[in-house]
Amino acid sequence: MPLIYSVKVDYSMIIENLAEFASKKFGQNFLKSDVYLHKIIQAMPNDELKVVEIGPGLGDLTKELVKLRNVTAFEVDKRLCEHLNTQFEKPIIDGNFQLRCGDVLEHWDRNSLIDEPYHLVANLPYYIATRIILKAFKDELCQSILVMVQKEVAIKFSALPKEKEFSALSVLASSIGKAKLCFEVGPEAFVPPPNVTSAVLLIEKTKSMNDEKFEAFLKIAFAQPRKKLSKNLVTSFPKDIIEQTFTKLDLDTNLRPHEATTLIYHHIYNELKDYLDGQQQSKRKKLSKSRAKNS
Image (tube, rainbow, N blue to C red; front, side):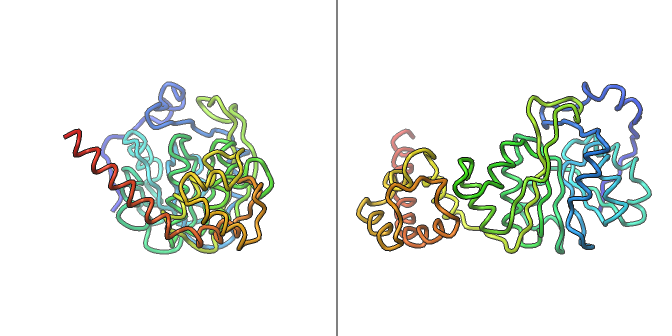
């Protein structure tokens, strides 16, 4: 059930003092450009699925979303929950808008954000953007991810093999669907303006993936992006096994991490994942011994 507050917020007061009202704790930068709000709406997949919005803020994008879809929003700032409950009183009563006040990650740890397929839309705080996107990758009910993030993060998710920005995040994104950077958004579109350029990223999912071992493998593979891929891998796997794997897959030993395709990473992972199990067990044993010594 949506949380209803009796205290009403003076919306005009918020607008007047918006820069001061924004919480640094929650990384708030409010998008106040109608041009970009409409561009986000236009970038959404064209169907009738419900929408989950993370961090609706003052509700400017939410106002456009509820005209088109049934929306469930998650807001961590209690002050904004009060405002949203007032601003969207009618859609709440009509059943077209549901507000959840609290940490979306805590809800996600228990189950999916809603109980049916949905599209995720969000203007994400920079400090938590990557974590939220990776959670959405694992949610089987999430069909697409349309998010405003720091431009550099959007590039990392949407980069293609051979491009220098191709990263572990690119591999994860292309493993579950197709990612593209839709458009950039300058600091002047926000109040208060951030110190960086933002971008809207769309990831259309074809499947979900929840494989922490694969993520751990990619961290090793991209640990030093400008080194040879084989050099990164031998820091965690037996050298002779790496050599055998590269020979079996007919890979150039001079291959750099950004030059391998997503398919190649899955092939290498399938050859090495059993050794990754052993490595993780070894790390756990060392950590356990270290804790025992210090206790």
